[in-house]
Length: 476
Image 1 (tube, helix red, strand yellow):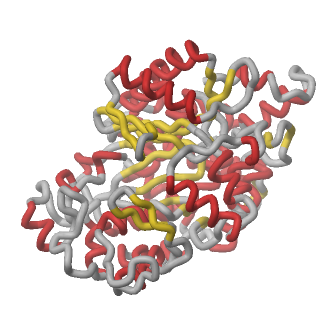
Image 2 (cartoon, helix red, strand yellow):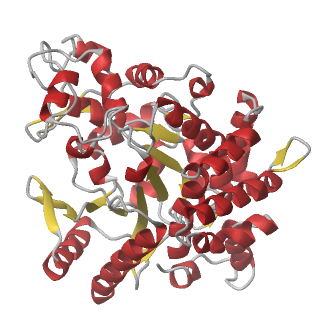
């Protein structure tokens, strides 16, 4: 959600006008260079809290930022696309459509235009991070335009793109590596803290929506709903039943992989359900998460497992005597992967990627729930007596059972129907005729049958237990 986080558009809690430079200096939030005002002064916890508080925006400034990833493959061999061809594709996109290039050393690693960006994930997943937009119609137009541009160039190069939550065929060892220094550092660390860290890096694709909040209290309510209902989104959007060329035994293997990936930085956030939840609570949580790296003059310094608290005290082993900037804090927040992540906006992170209409259905689902006061309160009423144990159970069982997961006296699909109705009504009350974007998932909710289950039926029937037809029939 690129331009929703820059300081010159940010709002401090309680303010109704843009921040001035004096505001930034006073509160030690970012300057327009992404550094701490008064650079020689060490950051305090209050500075870190103020950073999150600066994300507060009045309702009229709330925006929708949608991100999605997709797998590129050679249409003849069905093999993954190496970096050189992806870089060529980006170069043609830049020349033909006017994208601005971004480099790391001599390597083209991204593009940006009008608040949106295209970037590469570790295994070559091609990601669009959309600009903050006002309505879901803008989201649909943005995604459709992006896919049209990419497909036009990709078809000329013999490249196709697949929208699924988990790579259906290629093992980690056969997945190309993208030439970004941070990926090298993280890929060395991940196998030390979980069985599936490299799978998450190299073999998953997600769609997520980034949403705003107006106050600390508004954030708390949205965070609680987002965390509690994330397994329902996981179930509804499940589209990753395959791994290594065969059924994995799960409907969302992407979500299953997260269950054994660095438990320090993934999962639920039980502290968010406290009646006294505050920005400071999230800061305390984030400070306890081990670091990945620090960036200095385009150089990535491996700090895996080290403490940001030590960094704030000038005692980081790899940078002794040096203190973090607010940009370091922003990067650290981005290295945390809970089901809902807080930066200066909220990221809903639980869904597999899918076809175009499902890419747009995901933001519709959460906008309907979280951007309408009546629906938000209705969702809070649904989850208000759910226990931490029940939330944990759903997170662990949904990847395998989807909407058929037993919950209390029924199935998760029964709760999903009520939640879906709240989302639909919330969109209708927004008055932009946006509820049409939920049409793509309505049958899934009503039947309890996910896209993954439909794919498995095709695999066991029409496809003759072969994975190859997937690449043709589910081409983005």
